Amino acid sequence: MLSPPEAEAAIERRVPAAPQATLPLTDLSGRLLRQSIVAERDQPPFNRVSMDGVAIASSAWDRGLREFAIVGTQAAGAPQSCLPDPSACIEIMTGAVLPEGCDCVIPVERITNLGERIRVAGDVVAKPWMNVHRRGSDSLAGETLLMPGCVLGPAEVAIVASAGLATAEVAAEPRIMVISTGDELVEPGQPIRDWQIRRSNAYAVVAALQRRGYLQVAHDHLPDDLEVLRNRLRAHLDTHDVLVLSGGVSMGKFDFIPQVLAELGVETVFHKVAQRPGKPMWFGVRNPGKAVYALPGNPVSTLVSCIRYVIPGLAASLGMARTAPLQVVLGSDVNVPSDLSIFMPVTLAQDGSGRQVATPKPTRGSGDFVSLTGTDGFVELTAGPRTAQAGTLAPFYAW
Image (cartoon, rainbow, N blue to C red; front, side, top):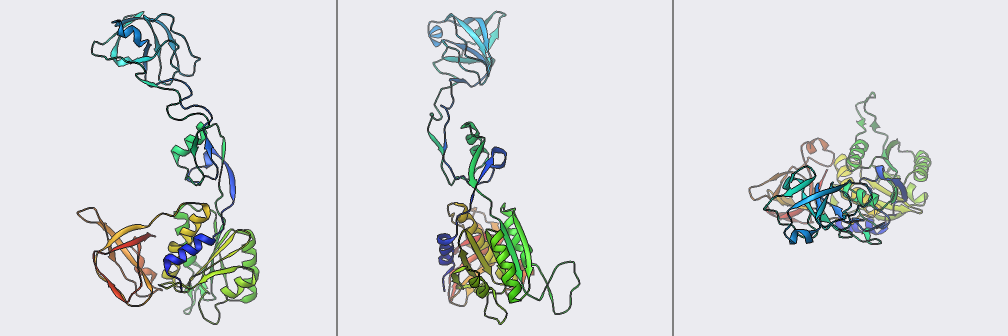
């Protein structure tokens, strides 16, 4: 069996790339860029004034001049004006182009208005390009500003707009179908018999995906019936980019999922991971562009496998660089009794030195989802048998 890191790496190697989409500026936030963004012009595109005041020629200042005649006003957004006389000044606004003949801006707070003249405060030290954002000092025309793979936040969206682009090519949000399987499952709100259980796994998976910004998520419930599974899974593969199944992947008589997926042309990348809980975890792909994650059906197994594999797999499909998990410190010893990696639920708290300390909160088994209440996520402890001692660093995965 693969170890959890090996399983994650196998998913990253084989997961199909998400399709591209062209979106307007207002829809770019949080998206992954799939094109280069090149500067349309020098930035700033002119010598830009960075505060309100008066524009002067520093050569006049060097000659000892401290009073200047006001000969005009340069507003932001207006064409460049010209200083006709070095002994004069032009009133100027933040964001305006620096007038021709000027190379210095005295802030309005440092001048006294004398009507048609201004006087500069005696302690001002004027010099060339003071309070001027010089042309091309941020970037030059044709310079690459953003590379493919960049996650677009507010600053990046502003850069796209500054390059003159009304739209950008980004990774399209994947269409995800979350599927529960099993005759024993009953929808919340419906009558239930003593031998049945509530359908909850799908809602946990949907919540985990939505929490991370995936909104095109639908869900379905399929019985343990070969013909129904064939027909419905075929339809979902035709209409969605990613399938996330829960249940039906172990060794039981009615665990039909691997068989049906193979019949539908889904290639098995791996089946079973050396982990507890969630050992029967399955992953496969189908061309063109389909990824299938079949998670074990016990609730804790489903949720930890979703966080550990589905979430990184989706990020890889979008082209995001893999990020290392947060390293936390175990707050107490944990027994790792077998040759399987252990996913241990924990709560996090900061100690006096600023370290994140993980307090283990073991469940009573992979069906005990109630024990997850109040936990922050889980740590991954490598296979034993061994004791992971308090103070040991371990990777942490948030719910």
